Image 1 (cartoon, rainbow, N blue to C red):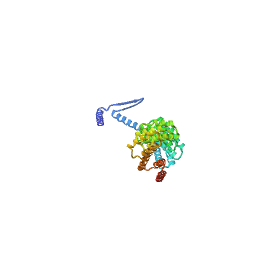
Image 2 (image 1 turned 180 degrees about the horizontal axis):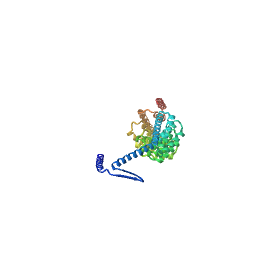
Image 3 (image 1 turned 60 degrees about the vertical axis):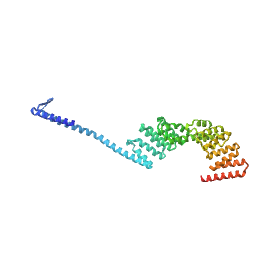
Image 4 (image 1 turned 180 degrees about the vertical axis):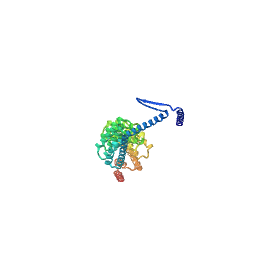
Length: 396
């Protein structure tokens, strides 16, 4: 709308100017040194317009002529860029297909003209590792970092991944520690550290990492719970194997609240206490755990040693809620035998066998018959236990 109004105003001005010039054509005099030009205004105006158009056209022509070299360079650069894109695309396809050497060569050749050197360098580094050229891999990673300084974390993450894949544990640890300094809460850095500690079985370091894994949701809740239990289980097992009593007791005391009475962990610890003849502590620990949760592994351990008659009383109280537990009845049979209550012991052992025949229970029954002087029944019980054990082994 504005353009129409402007055009209309110009038209009116032109009409008005034409009318004025028809009445008085005007007079124009131009004097330069001894040169003079005289003409009417009606001739001077078109002449000036024509001169302006000629000068404008000349300037446009000069500008276009001057731009020819630049346009040629742009065209050549575009052509080289397209060629680089084609080489990069080909290299990526070859990498996906497993042609490592060809992929690496195409990706490196495309570097001078590509607008994404980081992708080329990182993929070439992966290809070099697949070819077993670790030094070349590291060279490409270094070049990648220099080409795109802002991508330092991405480059070092790739380096850590490749080192882990090549089982270069010490180098991977150094890379990941550096990454952790740069980005302490980066989820993928934490995940790679988790994987590294699992691979090298560094359970104390993995345990120290657990709070960050949970806080930043590196793994799902279910996976985290399994990982936590496994880490503590392996750490305690290692301390038991090495016989490091003080660190072991500290590790047990420092367990997270939800694992304080975990049967799997407590079985490992209590077996160590039994092996080192710390019977009172073993009894107290097992009893505390059984108050929280009945467990057949723990009750089996509870019957493998005897301190006093209170053990039998406590175990019998557990029968109220666990009357059909073969493991509890076996435990009661052992504790009754330790208290020389032969009739009660026989009753418990026979009830256990009625629920679940077990070689260990037959062995205990054989020992009981020997105590009672009945060698025939003892031999029969031992024979049944051996037969059952043989059947179980064949089945497995």
